[in-house]
Length: 613
Image (tube, rainbow, N blue to C red; front, side, top):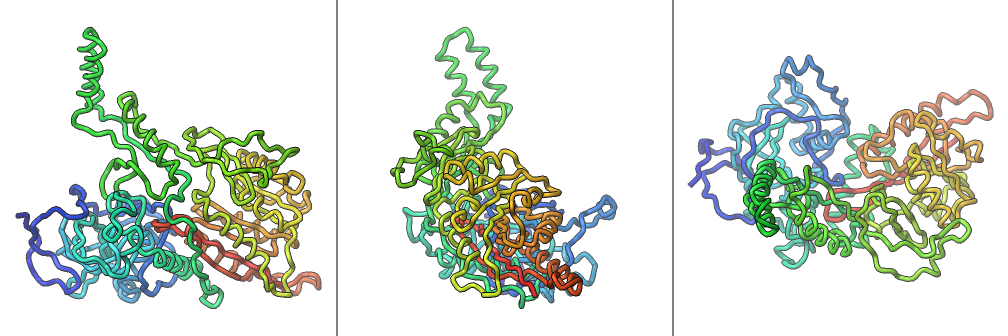
Protein backbone atom coordinates (compact mmCIF):
# COMPACT_ATOMS: atom_id res chain seq x y z
CA UNK A 1 0.00 0.00 0.00
CA UNK A 2 1.45 3.32 -1.10
CA UNK A 3 0.12 6.32 0.81
CA UNK A 4 0.05 9.93 -0.29
CA UNK A 5 2.11 12.32 1.81
CA UNK A 6 -0.73 14.86 1.62
CA UNK A 7 -3.16 14.87 4.56
CA UNK A 8 -6.70 13.81 3.84
CA UNK A 9 -9.13 16.68 3.65
CA UNK A 10 -11.83 17.90 1.42
CA UNK A 11 -10.50 20.09 -1.39
CA UNK A 12 -13.44 20.39 -3.76
CA UNK A 13 -15.82 18.30 -5.72
CA UNK A 14 -13.64 18.90 -8.74
CA UNK A 15 -10.44 17.26 -7.50
CA UNK A 16 -9.15 15.44 -4.44
CA UNK A 17 -6.04 13.71 -3.19
CA UNK A 18 -6.49 10.37 -1.56
CA UNK A 19 -4.74 7.26 -0.32
CA UNK A 20 -4.66 4.74 -3.12
CA UNK A 21 -3.53 1.27 -4.01
CA UNK A 22 -1.38 1.04 -7.15
CA UNK A 23 -2.82 -1.32 -9.71
CA UNK A 24 -1.94 -2.17 -13.25
CA UNK A 25 -3.53 0.60 -15.29
CA UNK A 26 -4.30 0.86 -18.98
CA UNK A 27 -1.80 3.71 -19.31
CA UNK A 28 1.48 3.25 -17.51
CA UNK A 29 2.83 6.04 -15.37
CA UNK A 30 6.30 7.36 -16.21
CA UNK A 31 9.02 7.10 -13.59
CA UNK A 32 9.16 9.77 -10.93
CA UNK A 33 10.70 13.05 -12.02
CA UNK A 34 12.40 15.74 -10.03
CA UNK A 35 9.91 18.53 -9.47
CA UNK A 36 10.84 21.66 -11.37
CA UNK A 37 9.96 25.08 -10.07
CA UNK A 38 11.16 27.33 -12.86
CA UNK A 39 9.75 27.75 -16.32
CA UNK A 40 12.16 27.01 -19.15
CA UNK A 41 11.89 29.30 -22.15
CA UNK A 42 10.13 26.62 -24.21
CA UNK A 43 8.70 23.99 -21.91
CA UNK A 44 6.03 22.72 -24.30
CA UNK A 45 6.97 20.61 -27.30
CA UNK A 46 4.16 20.71 -29.84
CA UNK A 47 4.25 17.86 -32.31
CA UNK A 48 3.14 19.70 -35.46
CA UNK A 49 0.95 22.51 -33.93
CA UNK A 50 -2.21 23.61 -32.21
CA UNK A 51 -5.83 22.67 -31.21
CA UNK A 52 -7.77 24.32 -28.49
CA UNK A 53 -9.83 24.56 -25.52
CA UNK A 54 -13.34 23.51 -24.93
CA UNK A 55 -14.49 26.28 -25.22
CA UNK A 56 -13.65 28.96 -22.71
CA UNK A 57 -14.06 32.61 -23.62
CA UNK A 58 -10.73 33.82 -25.03
CA UNK A 59 -8.66 36.37 -23.24
CA UNK A 60 -7.99 39.74 -24.78
CA UNK A 61 -4.54 40.37 -26.25
CA UNK A 62 -2.10 41.44 -23.57
CA UNK A 63 1.19 43.27 -23.67
CA UNK A 64 3.78 40.60 -24.33
CA UNK A 65 6.26 39.84 -21.52
CA UNK A 66 9.89 40.89 -21.74
CA UNK A 67 12.75 38.42 -21.75
CA UNK A 68 14.25 37.55 -18.39
CA UNK A 69 17.35 39.60 -17.65
CA UNK A 70 20.34 38.80 -15.43
CA UNK A 71 18.92 41.25 -12.90
CA UNK A 72 15.64 39.32 -12.90
CA UNK A 73 17.52 36.09 -12.19
CA UNK A 74 19.43 37.68 -9.31
CA UNK A 75 16.16 38.85 -7.77
CA UNK A 76 14.55 35.43 -8.24
CA UNK A 77 11.98 36.61 -10.77
CA UNK A 78 10.38 33.86 -12.80
CA UNK A 79 10.88 33.90 -16.58
CA UNK A 80 7.79 34.34 -18.74
CA UNK A 81 7.32 32.52 -22.06
CA UNK A 82 8.44 33.98 -25.36
CA UNK A 83 5.59 35.73 -27.17
CA UNK A 84 3.69 33.43 -29.58
CA UNK A 85 5.69 30.38 -28.42
CA UNK A 86 3.91 27.12 -27.48
CA UNK A 87 4.39 28.07 -23.83
CA UNK A 88 2.77 31.45 -24.43
CA UNK A 89 -0.17 29.81 -26.20
CA UNK A 90 -0.55 27.41 -23.28
CA UNK A 91 -0.54 30.32 -20.83
CA UNK A 92 -3.48 31.81 -22.71
CA UNK A 93 -5.23 28.42 -22.45
CA UNK A 94 -4.71 28.42 -18.69
CA UNK A 95 -5.91 32.02 -18.36
CA UNK A 96 -9.07 31.36 -20.35
CA UNK A 97 -9.77 28.13 -18.46
CA UNK A 98 -9.46 29.69 -15.00
CA UNK A 99 -11.26 32.85 -16.07
CA UNK A 100 -9.59 36.05 -17.24
CA UNK A 101 -11.12 38.14 -14.44
CA UNK A 102 -9.86 35.76 -11.77
CA UNK A 103 -6.36 35.65 -13.29
CA UNK A 104 -6.11 39.41 -13.80
CA UNK A 105 -7.16 40.12 -10.21
CA UNK A 106 -4.58 37.63 -8.95
CA UNK A 107 -1.79 39.09 -11.10
CA UNK A 108 -2.71 42.63 -10.03
CA UNK A 109 -1.69 41.77 -6.46
CA UNK A 110 1.93 41.41 -7.63
CA UNK A 111 2.70 39.16 -4.70
CA UNK A 112 3.93 36.16 -6.70
CA UNK A 113 0.98 34.01 -5.64
CA UNK A 114 0.46 32.91 -9.24
CA UNK A 115 3.58 30.77 -8.82
CA UNK A 116 2.48 29.19 -5.52
CA UNK A 117 0.54 25.99 -6.12
CA UNK A 118 -2.01 24.87 -3.51
CA UNK A 119 -0.23 23.08 -0.68
CA UNK A 120 -2.15 19.90 -1.48
CA UNK A 121 -0.32 19.63 -4.82
CA UNK A 122 2.93 18.40 -3.37
CA UNK A 123 5.81 16.89 -5.25
CA UNK A 124 4.54 13.84 -7.20
CA UNK A 125 1.12 13.99 -5.59
CA UNK A 126 -1.50 11.87 -7.35
CA UNK A 127 -4.81 13.64 -7.82
CA UNK A 128 -8.18 12.55 -9.10
CA UNK A 129 -9.60 14.99 -11.63
CA UNK A 130 -12.23 15.56 -14.27
CA UNK A 131 -10.75 16.87 -17.51
CA UNK A 132 -12.63 20.00 -18.46
CA UNK A 133 -11.03 21.29 -21.66
CA UNK A 134 -8.40 20.82 -24.33
CA UNK A 135 -5.32 22.97 -24.58
CA UNK A 136 -4.28 24.22 -28.01
CA UNK A 137 -1.62 21.49 -28.07
CA UNK A 138 -4.22 18.77 -27.51
CA UNK A 139 -3.64 18.02 -23.82
CA UNK A 140 -6.31 18.20 -21.13
CA UNK A 141 -7.02 21.00 -18.65
CA UNK A 142 -8.51 20.06 -15.29
CA UNK A 143 -9.58 22.38 -12.49
CA UNK A 144 -8.17 21.96 -9.00
CA UNK A 145 -9.71 24.22 -6.36
CA UNK A 146 -8.54 24.62 -2.79
CA UNK A 147 -10.57 27.15 -0.90
CA UNK A 148 -10.72 30.27 -3.04
CA UNK A 149 -7.65 29.33 -5.05
CA UNK A 150 -8.10 27.90 -8.54
CA UNK A 151 -5.35 26.01 -10.30
CA UNK A 152 -5.13 24.27 -13.67
CA UNK A 153 -3.57 20.85 -14.18
CA UNK A 154 -2.40 19.90 -17.69
CA UNK A 155 -2.31 16.19 -18.50
CA UNK A 156 -1.64 14.46 -21.84
CA UNK A 157 -3.85 11.75 -23.41
CA UNK A 158 -6.96 12.72 -21.42
CA UNK A 159 -9.99 14.31 -23.09
CA UNK A 160 -12.75 16.59 -21.75
CA UNK A 161 -15.17 14.53 -19.68
CA UNK A 162 -12.60 11.89 -18.69
CA UNK A 163 -12.25 11.09 -14.99
CA UNK A 164 -8.54 10.55 -14.41
CA UNK A 165 -5.73 10.12 -11.91
CA UNK A 166 -2.68 12.25 -12.65
CA UNK A 167 0.76 12.59 -11.04
CA UNK A 168 2.11 16.12 -10.59
CA UNK A 169 5.70 16.57 -11.75
CA UNK A 170 6.11 20.31 -12.30
CA UNK A 171 4.72 23.54 -10.86
CA UNK A 172 4.27 26.56 -13.08
CA UNK A 173 2.38 29.82 -13.32
CA UNK A 174 -1.20 29.06 -12.19
CA UNK A 175 -0.86 25.49 -13.41
CA UNK A 176 0.91 22.20 -12.91
CA UNK A 177 2.08 19.67 -15.46
CA UNK A 178 1.15 16.08 -14.73
CA UNK A 179 1.55 12.57 -16.13
CA UNK A 180 -1.51 10.45 -16.73
CA UNK A 181 -1.64 7.54 -14.30
CA UNK A 182 -5.02 6.07 -15.10
CA UNK A 183 -8.34 6.84 -16.77
CA UNK A 184 -11.15 5.97 -14.36
CA UNK A 185 -14.09 6.96 -16.57
CA UNK A 186 -14.04 7.69 -20.28
CA UNK A 187 -15.71 10.65 -21.98
CA UNK A 188 -18.81 9.86 -24.01
CA UNK A 189 -18.29 12.84 -26.31
CA UNK A 190 -14.59 13.07 -27.04
CA UNK A 191 -13.94 9.35 -27.47
CA UNK A 192 -15.33 6.63 -29.71
CA UNK A 193 -13.62 7.76 -32.94
CA UNK A 194 -12.12 5.42 -35.50
CA UNK A 195 -8.80 5.44 -33.65
CA UNK A 196 -10.28 4.60 -30.22
CA UNK A 197 -8.94 1.10 -29.58
CA UNK A 198 -11.45 0.51 -26.78
CA UNK A 199 -14.15 0.62 -29.47
CA UNK A 200 -12.09 -0.55 -32.46
CA UNK A 201 -9.37 -2.86 -31.07
CA UNK A 202 -7.77 -3.45 -34.47
CA UNK A 203 -7.73 0.21 -35.54
CA UNK A 204 -5.70 3.22 -34.53
CA UNK A 205 -2.26 3.01 -32.97
CA UNK A 206 -1.25 0.61 -30.23
CA UNK A 207 1.28 3.15 -28.96
CA UNK A 208 -1.24 5.91 -28.25
CA UNK A 209 -0.90 6.95 -24.63
CA UNK A 210 2.89 6.59 -24.69
CA UNK A 211 4.15 7.92 -28.04
CA UNK A 212 4.11 11.71 -28.16
CA UNK A 213 3.26 11.93 -31.87
CA UNK A 214 -0.56 12.05 -31.85
CA UNK A 215 -2.89 13.73 -29.37
CA UNK A 216 -6.42 13.29 -30.75
CA UNK A 217 -6.55 9.70 -31.97
CA UNK A 218 -9.66 8.59 -29.99
CA UNK A 219 -11.58 11.78 -30.87
CA UNK A 220 -14.22 11.39 -33.64
CA UNK A 221 -12.90 13.04 -36.79
CA UNK A 222 -15.64 15.66 -37.10
CA UNK A 223 -14.76 16.83 -33.57
CA UNK A 224 -11.08 16.97 -34.48
CA UNK A 225 -12.02 19.37 -37.29
CA UNK A 226 -14.22 21.42 -34.96
CA UNK A 227 -11.36 21.56 -32.49
CA UNK A 228 -9.02 22.93 -35.15
CA UNK A 229 -11.54 25.52 -36.26
CA UNK A 230 -11.62 26.72 -32.66
CA UNK A 231 -7.82 26.96 -32.73
CA UNK A 232 -7.98 29.41 -35.64
CA UNK A 233 -10.68 31.43 -33.86
CA UNK A 234 -8.65 31.69 -30.67
CA UNK A 235 -5.45 32.61 -32.49
CA UNK A 236 -7.08 35.66 -34.06
CA UNK A 237 -8.91 36.63 -30.87
CA UNK A 238 -5.72 36.38 -28.82
CA UNK A 239 -2.91 37.49 -31.11
CA UNK A 240 -4.15 39.53 -34.08
CA UNK A 241 -5.11 42.65 -32.01
CA UNK A 242 -7.95 43.09 -34.51
CA UNK A 243 -11.46 43.96 -33.32
CA UNK A 244 -14.00 41.25 -34.00
CA UNK A 245 -15.62 43.46 -36.65
CA UNK A 246 -12.49 43.11 -38.82
CA UNK A 247 -12.19 39.33 -38.47
CA UNK A 248 -14.54 37.33 -40.71
CA UNK A 249 -16.33 34.22 -39.48
CA UNK A 250 -13.86 31.35 -39.55
CA UNK A 251 -14.86 28.88 -42.27
CA UNK A 252 -15.12 25.16 -41.41
CA UNK A 253 -11.83 23.27 -41.43
CA UNK A 254 -11.18 21.29 -44.61
CA UNK A 255 -10.56 17.66 -43.66
CA UNK A 256 -7.87 15.42 -45.07
CA UNK A 257 -9.05 12.88 -47.68
CA UNK A 258 -6.91 10.37 -45.80
CA UNK A 259 -6.97 10.27 -41.99
CA UNK A 260 -4.60 7.29 -41.73
CA UNK A 261 -1.66 6.22 -43.86
CA UNK A 262 -1.22 9.75 -45.21
CA UNK A 263 2.17 10.88 -43.97
CA UNK A 264 4.81 10.77 -46.71
CA UNK A 265 7.82 11.48 -44.49
CA UNK A 266 8.80 10.17 -41.06
CA UNK A 267 12.05 10.49 -39.14
CA UNK A 268 12.41 7.77 -36.48
CA UNK A 269 15.54 7.94 -34.40
CA UNK A 270 17.60 5.91 -31.96
CA UNK A 271 20.15 6.37 -29.19
CA UNK A 272 23.69 5.04 -29.24
CA UNK A 273 24.64 2.20 -26.87
CA UNK A 274 25.42 3.40 -23.33
CA UNK A 275 29.05 3.99 -22.50
CA UNK A 276 29.21 1.05 -20.13
CA UNK A 277 27.98 -1.33 -22.85
CA UNK A 278 30.65 -0.10 -25.29
CA UNK A 279 33.33 -0.54 -22.64
CA UNK A 280 32.04 -4.02 -21.82
CA UNK A 281 32.10 -4.95 -25.51
CA UNK A 282 35.66 -3.72 -25.95
CA UNK A 283 36.80 -5.79 -22.98
CA UNK A 284 34.99 -8.94 -24.15
CA UNK A 285 36.28 -8.54 -27.71
CA UNK A 286 39.82 -8.21 -26.45
CA UNK A 287 39.38 -11.43 -24.48
CA UNK A 288 37.78 -13.18 -27.48
CA UNK A 289 40.34 -11.97 -30.04
CA UNK A 290 42.25 -15.20 -29.93
CA UNK A 291 39.31 -17.57 -29.65
CA UNK A 292 37.48 -17.10 -32.96
CA UNK A 293 34.51 -15.48 -34.71
CA UNK A 294 31.81 -17.24 -32.66
CA UNK A 295 33.22 -15.98 -29.38
CA UNK A 296 33.42 -12.44 -30.80
CA UNK A 297 29.74 -12.65 -31.75
CA UNK A 298 28.87 -13.94 -28.28
CA UNK A 299 30.79 -10.97 -26.87
CA UNK A 300 28.49 -8.53 -28.67
CA UNK A 301 25.37 -10.35 -27.50
CA UNK A 302 26.66 -10.35 -23.93
CA UNK A 303 27.48 -6.62 -24.10
CA UNK A 304 23.87 -5.92 -25.14
CA UNK A 305 22.48 -7.48 -21.96
CA UNK A 306 20.90 -4.93 -19.64
CA UNK A 307 19.80 -2.42 -22.28
CA UNK A 308 17.56 -2.34 -25.33
CA UNK A 309 18.11 -0.81 -28.75
CA UNK A 310 14.95 1.21 -29.45
CA UNK A 311 14.14 2.71 -32.85
CA UNK A 312 11.14 5.01 -33.00
CA UNK A 313 9.88 8.30 -31.62
CA UNK A 314 9.98 10.31 -28.40
CA UNK A 315 8.07 8.85 -25.47
CA UNK A 316 5.64 11.32 -23.89
CA UNK A 317 6.53 11.94 -20.26
CA UNK A 318 9.60 9.73 -20.26
CA UNK A 319 13.15 10.31 -21.43
CA UNK A 320 14.57 8.45 -24.39
CA UNK A 321 13.18 6.81 -27.50
CA UNK A 322 10.13 4.57 -27.67
CA UNK A 323 10.47 1.43 -29.80
CA UNK A 324 7.96 1.73 -32.67
CA UNK A 325 7.32 -1.13 -35.08
CA UNK A 326 4.65 0.64 -37.14
CA UNK A 327 3.20 4.14 -37.48
CA UNK A 328 -0.45 4.06 -38.64
CA UNK A 329 -0.41 7.63 -39.96
CA UNK A 330 2.58 6.88 -42.24
CA UNK A 331 2.06 5.51 -45.75
CA UNK A 332 2.27 1.72 -46.21
CA UNK A 333 5.54 1.90 -48.15
CA UNK A 334 7.17 3.78 -45.26
CA UNK A 335 6.03 1.19 -42.72
CA UNK A 336 7.50 -1.56 -44.89
CA UNK A 337 10.81 0.29 -45.02
CA UNK A 338 10.64 1.02 -41.29
CA UNK A 339 10.74 -2.72 -40.61
CA UNK A 340 13.87 -3.08 -42.75
CA UNK A 341 15.59 0.00 -41.32
CA UNK A 342 14.88 -1.06 -37.74
CA UNK A 343 16.44 -4.48 -38.36
CA UNK A 344 19.50 -2.90 -39.97
CA UNK A 345 20.06 -0.48 -37.08
CA UNK A 346 19.56 -3.13 -34.41
CA UNK A 347 22.02 -5.50 -36.06
CA UNK A 348 24.74 -2.85 -36.24
CA UNK A 349 23.93 -0.68 -33.21
CA UNK A 350 27.22 -1.42 -31.42
CA UNK A 351 29.11 0.37 -34.19
CA UNK A 352 27.37 3.70 -33.53
CA UNK A 353 29.20 6.29 -31.45
CA UNK A 354 26.13 8.51 -31.13
CA UNK A 355 22.41 8.38 -31.84
CA UNK A 356 21.00 9.25 -35.23
CA UNK A 357 17.81 9.93 -37.17
CA UNK A 358 16.53 7.78 -40.01
CA UNK A 359 14.87 9.51 -42.96
CA UNK A 360 12.00 7.67 -44.65
CA UNK A 361 10.41 9.52 -47.60
CA UNK A 362 7.60 8.18 -49.80
CA UNK A 363 8.35 8.84 -53.47
CA UNK A 364 7.67 7.84 -57.04
CA UNK A 365 10.39 6.07 -59.03
CA UNK A 366 12.54 8.33 -61.18
CA UNK A 367 10.70 8.96 -64.47
CA UNK A 368 12.32 7.54 -67.58
CA UNK A 369 13.18 9.49 -69.56
CA UNK A 370 13.60 12.43 -67.20
CA UNK A 371 11.28 15.34 -68.11
CA UNK A 372 13.06 18.44 -69.42
CA UNK A 373 12.10 21.91 -70.63
CA UNK A 374 12.18 20.57 -74.19
CA UNK A 375 10.34 17.34 -73.34
CA UNK A 376 8.16 18.20 -70.30
CA UNK A 377 6.13 15.92 -68.06
CA UNK A 378 2.85 14.76 -69.55
CA UNK A 379 0.39 13.37 -67.03
CA UNK A 380 -1.61 11.75 -69.84
CA UNK A 381 1.34 9.49 -70.62
CA UNK A 382 2.07 8.65 -66.99
CA UNK A 383 0.73 5.41 -65.61
CA UNK A 384 0.15 4.36 -62.02
CA UNK A 385 3.49 3.44 -60.48
CA UNK A 386 4.27 1.75 -57.21
CA UNK A 387 5.78 4.05 -54.63
CA UNK A 388 9.23 3.56 -53.18
CA UNK A 389 10.84 4.56 -49.89
CA UNK A 390 13.89 6.82 -50.10
CA UNK A 391 16.32 6.84 -47.16
CA UNK A 392 19.18 9.01 -48.48
CA UNK A 393 18.85 12.67 -47.43
CA UNK A 394 20.60 13.83 -50.60
CA UNK A 395 18.70 11.62 -53.02
CA UNK A 396 16.32 13.18 -55.52
CA UNK A 397 12.67 12.22 -54.92
CA UNK A 398 9.64 12.64 -57.18
CA UNK A 399 6.06 13.35 -56.16
CA UNK A 400 2.86 14.07 -58.07
CA UNK A 401 0.37 16.76 -57.07
CA UNK A 402 -2.58 16.29 -59.40
CA UNK A 403 -1.29 16.78 -62.98
CA UNK A 404 2.02 18.25 -61.79
CA UNK A 405 5.33 16.51 -61.08
CA UNK A 406 7.73 17.79 -58.43
CA UNK A 407 11.26 16.80 -57.57
CA UNK A 408 13.39 17.82 -54.58
CA UNK A 409 16.02 16.32 -52.32
CA UNK A 410 14.67 13.86 -49.77
CA UNK A 411 15.92 15.88 -46.81
CA UNK A 412 14.37 19.18 -47.93
CA UNK A 413 10.94 20.52 -46.99
CA UNK A 414 7.80 19.51 -48.86
CA UNK A 415 4.29 19.10 -47.45
CA UNK A 416 3.99 15.66 -45.83
CA UNK A 417 0.33 14.89 -46.63
CA UNK A 418 0.01 14.51 -50.39
CA UNK A 419 -3.70 13.66 -50.22
CA UNK A 420 -4.73 17.19 -49.20
CA UNK A 421 -2.49 19.21 -51.53
CA UNK A 422 -5.03 19.36 -54.36
CA UNK A 423 -7.86 20.52 -52.01
CA UNK A 424 -5.45 23.08 -50.53
CA UNK A 425 -4.13 24.53 -53.80
CA UNK A 426 -7.61 24.45 -55.38
CA UNK A 427 -9.02 26.39 -52.45
CA UNK A 428 -6.27 29.01 -52.75
CA UNK A 429 -7.01 29.40 -56.46
CA UNK A 430 -10.75 29.79 -55.82
CA UNK A 431 -10.11 32.25 -52.97
CA UNK A 432 -8.03 34.45 -55.27
CA UNK A 433 -10.67 34.27 -58.00
CA UNK A 434 -14.05 33.90 -56.23
CA UNK A 435 -17.10 32.91 -58.29
CA UNK A 436 -18.89 36.13 -57.28
CA UNK A 437 -16.14 38.74 -57.16
CA UNK A 438 -16.60 42.24 -55.89
CA UNK A 439 -17.00 44.37 -59.04
CA UNK A 440 -14.76 47.03 -57.49
CA UNK A 441 -11.85 44.59 -57.13
CA UNK A 442 -9.27 44.31 -59.93
CA UNK A 443 -8.51 40.78 -61.07
CA UNK A 444 -4.80 39.94 -60.62
CA UNK A 445 -2.91 38.70 -63.69
CA UNK A 446 0.49 38.02 -62.11
CA UNK A 447 1.41 35.77 -59.17
CA UNK A 448 4.34 36.25 -56.79
CA UNK A 449 5.08 33.14 -54.69
CA UNK A 450 7.18 34.18 -51.67
CA UNK A 451 8.92 31.60 -49.47
CA UNK A 452 8.33 29.53 -52.61
CA UNK A 453 10.39 26.47 -51.67
CA UNK A 454 10.16 23.94 -54.51
CA UNK A 455 7.45 25.98 -56.22
CA UNK A 456 4.28 24.23 -55.01
CA UNK A 457 1.92 27.22 -55.19
CA UNK A 458 3.60 28.98 -58.10
CA UNK A 459 3.35 25.89 -60.31
CA UNK A 460 -0.08 24.58 -59.27
CA UNK A 461 -1.67 28.05 -59.58
CA UNK A 462 0.09 28.94 -62.86
CA UNK A 463 -2.88 28.18 -65.20
CA UNK A 464 -4.79 31.11 -63.64
CA UNK A 465 -2.07 33.71 -64.27
CA UNK A 466 -0.28 35.12 -67.27
CA UNK A 467 3.06 35.15 -65.41
CA UNK A 468 4.45 33.67 -62.19
CA UNK A 469 7.48 34.69 -60.12
CA UNK A 470 8.88 32.74 -57.19
CA UNK A 471 11.03 34.44 -54.55
CA UNK A 472 13.26 32.78 -51.94
CA UNK A 473 16.44 33.58 -50.05
CA UNK A 474 17.64 29.95 -50.48
CA UNK A 475 19.48 29.37 -53.75
CA UNK A 476 18.92 25.60 -53.45
CA UNK A 477 15.15 26.10 -53.21
CA UNK A 478 15.18 28.43 -56.22
CA UNK A 479 17.10 25.87 -58.23
CA UNK A 480 14.58 23.16 -57.30
CA UNK A 481 11.63 25.42 -58.20
CA UNK A 482 13.19 26.33 -61.54
CA UNK A 483 13.77 22.67 -62.34
CA UNK A 484 10.17 21.80 -61.41
CA UNK A 485 8.84 24.58 -63.63
CA UNK A 486 10.89 23.31 -66.56
CA UNK A 487 9.75 19.71 -66.01
CA UNK A 488 6.13 20.87 -66.16
CA UNK A 489 6.57 22.97 -69.30
CA UNK A 490 6.49 26.33 -67.51
CA UNK A 491 9.96 27.63 -68.32
CA UNK A 492 8.69 30.61 -70.34
CA UNK A 493 5.87 31.47 -67.94
CA UNK A 494 7.80 31.50 -64.68
CA UNK A 495 10.65 33.48 -63.14
CA UNK A 496 12.53 32.32 -60.04
CA UNK A 497 14.53 34.87 -58.08
CA UNK A 498 16.92 34.37 -55.17
CA UNK A 499 16.20 37.54 -53.22
CA UNK A 500 17.88 39.23 -50.31
CA UNK A 501 16.05 39.42 -47.00
CA UNK A 502 16.31 43.21 -46.96
CA UNK A 503 15.03 43.49 -50.57
CA UNK A 504 12.92 40.38 -51.13
CA UNK A 505 10.88 41.96 -53.94
CA UNK A 506 13.92 43.41 -55.67
CA UNK A 507 14.14 42.49 -59.35
CA UNK A 508 10.41 41.89 -59.82
CA UNK A 509 9.82 45.23 -61.54
CA UNK A 510 12.41 44.37 -64.20
CA UNK A 511 10.49 41.14 -64.85
CA UNK A 512 7.20 42.99 -65.36
CA UNK A 513 5.71 42.40 -61.90
CA UNK A 514 4.02 45.25 -60.05
CA UNK A 515 1.70 45.20 -57.07
CA UNK A 516 -1.07 46.84 -59.08
CA UNK A 517 -1.70 43.65 -61.08
CA UNK A 518 -0.33 40.95 -58.75
CA UNK A 519 -1.37 38.46 -56.11
CA UNK A 520 1.23 37.46 -53.50
CA UNK A 521 1.24 34.06 -51.78
CA UNK A 522 3.07 34.01 -48.44
CA UNK A 523 3.98 30.60 -46.96
CA UNK A 524 6.58 31.19 -44.21
CA UNK A 525 8.04 28.79 -41.60
CA UNK A 526 6.52 28.47 -38.11
CA UNK A 527 8.07 31.69 -36.81
CA UNK A 528 6.06 33.65 -39.37
CA UNK A 529 7.24 36.81 -41.14
CA UNK A 530 9.50 39.48 -39.72
CA UNK A 531 8.55 43.16 -39.78
CA UNK A 532 10.96 44.11 -42.63
CA UNK A 533 9.30 41.53 -44.91
CA UNK A 534 5.80 42.73 -44.01
CA UNK A 535 6.84 46.34 -44.66
CA UNK A 536 8.23 45.36 -48.07
CA UNK A 537 4.99 43.52 -48.82
CA UNK A 538 2.98 46.64 -47.97
CA UNK A 539 5.27 48.76 -50.15
CA UNK A 540 4.70 46.34 -53.04
CA UNK A 541 0.95 46.69 -52.39
CA UNK A 542 -0.46 43.67 -54.27
CA UNK A 543 -4.15 43.35 -55.10
CA UNK A 544 -4.49 40.16 -53.07
CA UNK A 545 -2.41 38.49 -50.32
CA UNK A 546 -2.87 34.80 -49.52
CA UNK A 547 -1.07 33.88 -46.29
CA UNK A 548 -0.65 30.11 -45.81
CA UNK A 549 0.69 29.17 -42.39
CA UNK A 550 1.69 26.13 -40.35
CA UNK A 551 1.45 28.30 -37.20
CA UNK A 552 -1.85 30.14 -36.99
CA UNK A 553 -0.69 32.14 -33.96
CA UNK A 554 2.15 33.89 -35.79
CA UNK A 555 -0.12 34.21 -38.83
CA UNK A 556 -2.69 36.06 -36.72
CA UNK A 557 0.04 38.39 -35.43
CA UNK A 558 1.25 39.12 -38.98
CA UNK A 559 -2.22 39.56 -40.48
CA UNK A 560 -3.07 41.99 -37.68
CA UNK A 561 0.05 43.99 -38.51
CA UNK A 562 -0.82 44.11 -42.22
CA UNK A 563 -4.36 45.34 -41.52
CA UNK A 564 -3.37 47.95 -38.93
CA UNK A 565 -0.31 49.21 -40.79
CA UNK A 566 -2.07 49.39 -44.17
CA UNK A 567 -4.88 51.39 -42.63
CA UNK A 568 -2.34 53.79 -41.11
CA UNK A 569 -0.40 54.19 -44.37
CA UNK A 570 -3.53 54.38 -46.45
CA UNK A 571 -4.96 57.21 -44.40
CA UNK A 572 -1.63 59.06 -44.50
CA UNK A 573 -1.73 59.00 -48.30
CA UNK A 574 -5.07 60.81 -48.44
CA UNK A 575 -4.86 64.33 -49.83
CA UNK A 576 -1.42 63.90 -51.44
CA UNK A 577 -2.76 64.33 -54.95
CA UNK A 578 -5.55 63.17 -57.20
CA UNK A 579 -3.67 60.01 -58.22
CA UNK A 580 -3.02 58.94 -54.61
CA UNK A 581 -5.93 57.05 -53.11
CA UNK A 582 -6.73 56.06 -49.57
CA UNK A 583 -6.14 52.32 -49.22
CA UNK A 584 -6.09 49.43 -46.75
CA UNK A 585 -6.16 45.62 -46.56
CA UNK A 586 -9.18 43.75 -45.23
CA UNK A 587 -9.33 40.11 -44.20
CA UNK A 588 -11.71 38.47 -46.64
CA UNK A 589 -11.61 34.88 -45.39
CA UNK A 590 -9.94 32.56 -42.86
CA UNK A 591 -9.94 28.78 -43.00
CA UNK A 592 -8.07 25.84 -41.49
CA UNK A 593 -6.81 22.74 -43.29
CA UNK A 594 -6.15 19.44 -41.56
CA UNK A 595 -2.79 18.37 -42.93
CA UNK A 596 -2.10 16.10 -39.94
CA UNK A 597 -5.16 14.14 -38.76
CA UNK A 598 -4.95 12.56 -35.28
CA UNK A 599 -2.58 15.36 -34.20
CA UNK A 600 -3.28 18.82 -32.84
CA UNK A 601 -1.83 20.61 -35.87
CA UNK A 602 -3.86 22.87 -38.15
CA UNK A 603 -2.72 24.74 -41.26
CA UNK A 604 -4.41 28.09 -41.85
CA UNK A 605 -5.14 30.12 -44.99
CA UNK A 606 -5.92 33.86 -44.73
CA UNK A 607 -7.00 35.91 -47.76
CA UNK A 608 -6.49 39.69 -47.66
CA UNK A 609 -7.86 42.03 -50.32
CA UNK A 610 -6.70 45.54 -51.17
CA UNK A 611 -9.41 48.19 -50.88
CA UNK A 612 -8.88 51.60 -52.46
CA UNK A 613 -11.07 54.68 -52.30
